Length: 89
Image 1 (cartoon, helix red, strand yellow):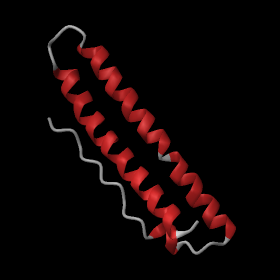
Image 2 (cartoon, rainbow, N blue to C red):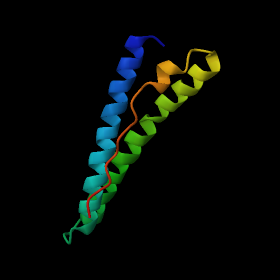
Image 3 (cartoon, rainbow, N blue to C red):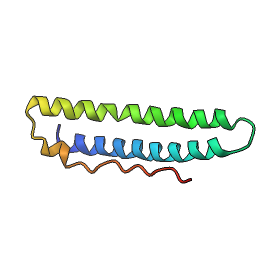
């Protein structure tokens, strides 16, 4: 994969990380809310989190294929890690 493709993939991965962070935070908040429907709202946020986490599987698959194809791993390994904040308590 060329540099442009890696840049696009990195942007998608960063967007997924933002969704995971936001959904995790909101799920924690919804779970603690003493309001009607709070469990349903929590489940919605957990579904968002799962969807974003599953989309990162594309990145893992690409990295695996890149390693198997003999392309220098430094192209993939140089991408910054996903930083996911823990939900506040």
